[in-house]
Picture (cartoon, rainbow, N blue to C red):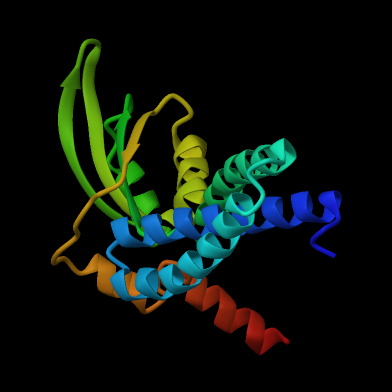
Length: 198
């Protein structure tokens, strides 16, 4: 079976895709501080790497095997990045500057369950409202949509914090409160009234 050139090319390509994908995920897990999970992934990564490299070294005279190895490497990087985006590990800090210094902006963001620190600032054209918002990466796009709905002209910068310590917000996120933000008193009354009517 391995003597078949086409089968060999496909095997080398597939093995290298798996290896580089695992390598990318392992590196990201390490950077995120998930050391034990990264170590577990590395066990599979090194086995796949040895198998793939062995196949290529045993058949160095076949140029198509080298091409398959190189193509598998590039494809593995793309797939590993896609996997990392789907996992969406860690947190994102989003800095927002709104042209509208109305503090209701902060309240609307907090009502969605996000952790917000806000302060008044001054820009070239006058007063501004500056905010620092912390969110898990998996809710990042949802946060951007919320900000755009409140102020389409808001200036947004995001970055990934290396370490988070203290504060009440992270505990709330771990309890799942970001997915289920607190309901307003009016909402509770409306819900109770509607349930009575039913």
